[in-house]
Length: 115
Image 1 (spheres, rainbow, N blue to C red):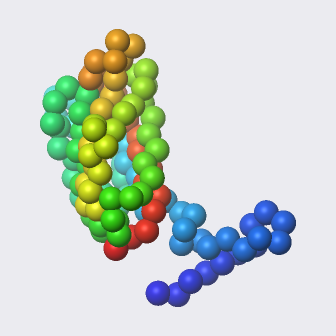
Image 2: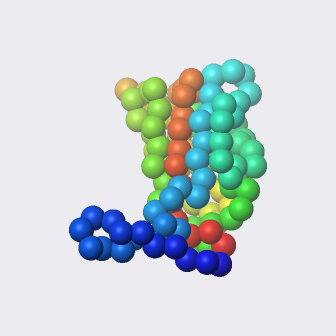
């Protein structure tokens, strides 16, 4: 694949491939069955329990060693027991008592290397 770099801060060169999101998703867990409002590089989601979503990545990551950043309209978001695989990950929306709770908005962005 062709590699492209740009000037970042100062004179530092930045690889565009390393800096862009490889996958992202906006999920509504409250509709009875989880609904993908919008996404990029995501095949599907699975409702595994209240507040729990497994996201299947369309084009797998190179390994399970990638960075996932998430947000929700609940109190916090967590990743279930660090369940990361090259092709999927599981996340939980938690309320103020740290109990899994369906959330109207759960958003996640993945950064790392594609397979």
